[in-house]
Length: 400
Image (cartoon, rainbow, N blue to C red):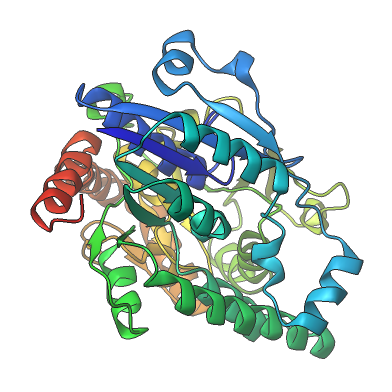
């Protein structure tokens, strides 16, 4: 098949979970050896297109092109959307330049399938329908409006909370109206599939979780745990919100029981005036050269998310590295493992601190849960198997 993959940010370099999810699908399609792939991606100030950081084989296999979009916050546009009722989250990703290049591509090549990576590429559905007779698939990384509803609920300033709620409502309206205009949806988890169906989706919903290439995984870490770590971009609101909650409510409880405990915070785009530098036993690492060094080190990964949807790819990667994970329930959505067997769930400060102290105090169990979680990931999240399963389901559902 000829497959066009539309991305709202460059899949490579894979700097965050969304990039890695898109890249995993591309790699799976290429590795099958049966399909011709074309990637068209938006590029932004936050996610620039860096061809020099992509290997030659990838550039050739994907024939990738990029179009720069200015998605930075524009107060005038935001005010305009308040008047029109449009979703500002979505309109920021529409560009006439992108539409023109997409139109030119569709006129030159007849594609069998067009994959829309995330809801933010959906504004181009009308263009694809106009110039392409192939099947159109929405690859839903999240149910986007759920993230914004969670954020609004957890935001304290009244004016900001009202505005976030308005954004969430507009995004929900758009998401519900557009989802059944695709031929099918590839949700990232069984939880999200169920939510799409509850929202009234009338097209088939398949499941394509994030997958890892087992042959490329580094060896798992073995040995005692000696610190806690968080890895995540600090320009994403749910991460900031979660770390604020953890440091303000959980960390003092951990320090009461284990005064020598250490917390390492890593990820891109930490603000210069980060307030956590002055908190005892916290080290701000910023962006790390190789995330796998942390995923296979001697730490406990924490995922203190209070808002989100979809699947946390960093959870899959930490488990694959043999790391114990302590997370809120939201942080482990989409991963069908068992609490205390493959990870630890905790939603209150007392529970969260207790699970951390429990693991730090029991090195044998820390190593055992790391081994069980790695085996679980290798069994359930092998990338090529997941991509092949999706293609098989699509073929037999007559979507393609």
